[in-house]
Length: 339
Image 1 (cartoon, rainbow, N blue to C red):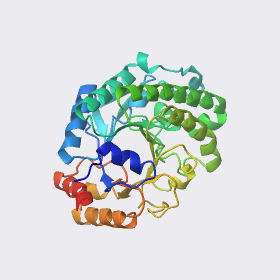
Image 2 (image 1 turned 45 degrees about the vertical axis):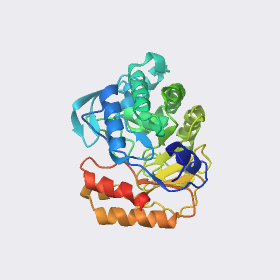
Image 3 (image 1 turned 90 degrees about the horizontal axis):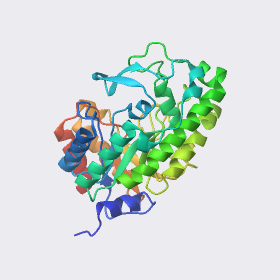
Image 4 (image 1 turned 120 degrees about the vertical axis):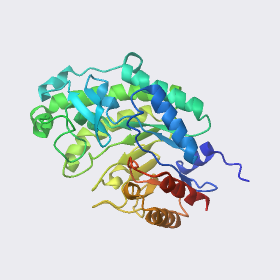
């Protein structure tokens, strides 16, 4: 019998080393159980124990970081995993100067999620936990009512601040806001360590896509602020997720990260053979769980494990598992690493 613990495997693989076996996890939203620390913790613990995942990506509600500055959402009205945005604290780009640094200790939404992490840690004392954090650029887009994907709006906001207004007409104000957000997130990230988090799942969701930002803009508006947040998380193991098509995972080879997750089957993206420095995380099309195509899920998982058998690798879906996933699909997926 192996003497490797879940923590041993997680740390080894994200340190670029081999473990006694591959590890696997999956994550999804439970949109009726994400509005309180108690519900999020209880659901995360139950979901993890049900499938005996090797590690946990905590999956808070998608809007939680934007809420810190006062955005309001209707949690009785969701479009997929996004609650309807009722208000934005930044109705116009010139208002970006009004954003101020928040301290996690004084901000209700951060306290809520720190409490959730503490409860999850108590319920899963031996399981690696990493908290989901969106990049400052992504958070800024949410705050002003824009999607972090290549679309015009978020659910509920029909006339968001335009990208031209944000990043051309009021570029200095945008940098002020990004700095404020990054310092706020850095403070929260440090508190996460004390709450029991083993690192971050750091999502630059959609913002590497050339249809949203060209390379120069991304380098100016994301990289410096990503560094501030990731520096604060240097105590743990950090997985960066670059979401969607044309996500360019190779752009992050110089980031201070231990793992990298991207959609290996989306248009414009490389597969698992990509020349990346961090440990690769993923390998299975998350869309297969929407239709619960168990044969394809199993085949893609087996192919990924075969391709990566001589390298440190973490098997997972390429993004969040859709809400209509079945128990059988998840059981079959989890068991692949034990066969």
